[in-house]
Amino acid sequence: MLQLIGVFFLVFGVFFCVMGVIGNIRLPDIFTRLHATSKVSSMGILGLMVASALLVPDSASKAIALGVLVLFSAPVASQAIARSAYRDGCAMVGLAQDDLAVQYIDFSYNYTIGEEVPWQASPDEPEIDPDDPANVDEQLFGAPDEEPRDG
Amino acid sequence: MANRCTHLNQIQKVVPSAQGCEDCLKTGDAWLHLRICLTCGHVGCCDSSANQHARRHYEETGHALIQSFERGENWLWCYIDEMILKPRG
Ligand SMILES: [Zn+2]
Ligand SMILES: [Zn+2]
Ligand SMILES: [Zn+2]
Image (cartoon, each protein chain N blue to C red):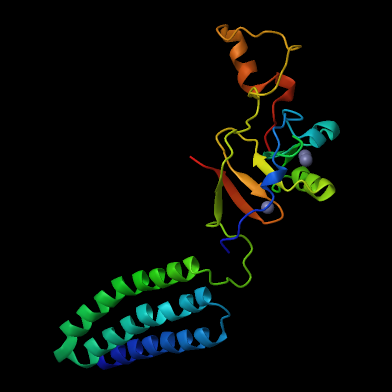
């Protein structure tokens, strides 16, 4: 029975290794390839380690320790490779939007609904007393009929 | 990747054209979020809105840079480079 479960995990691990190899051949860029190959070093190795622990009980402690260590280190390694590839400018195939590509610029003003624009000369506008609580809503959100609606 | 927006010269000191989506207010439609054109001050609605007036304004005029016109948000978007820009600091 132990042997049967061991063989199951053997097949499980080999399956992930094969899928990783196929993915590495078929996928177009480093990021998607890493997605495939990181499964080899996590699920694949883990399956093989569990299998060897079951099939060769003498070395079970070694195999389990190895499996646990690989489980923790493999995702970290994959992430480090992906990050260095990104920083090096590796192209992403089929990229729709790069959320990490933020450019910081010298631009100070933040436009917001209802706020006074600093360089706007508005001599025609009636004076609003900022201390009058009745005016607070109008100051913040503009006249009621100009309020944005939901949806 | 890691490209730079080359359209920053389009940014002008603008005055918001309306306190809601200019075009939606005319037709009485609803919008989700507001974006302001940094070239002429046109206030339009975002791509998640039904009418997408901000994008339509870019397609009509070529004004590529918009800023979010929503309270608490402070980011810019370039339609041509399709990237986010943020004010420094
Ligand atoms: Zn640009
Ligand atoms: Zn609109
Ligand atoms: Zn414009």
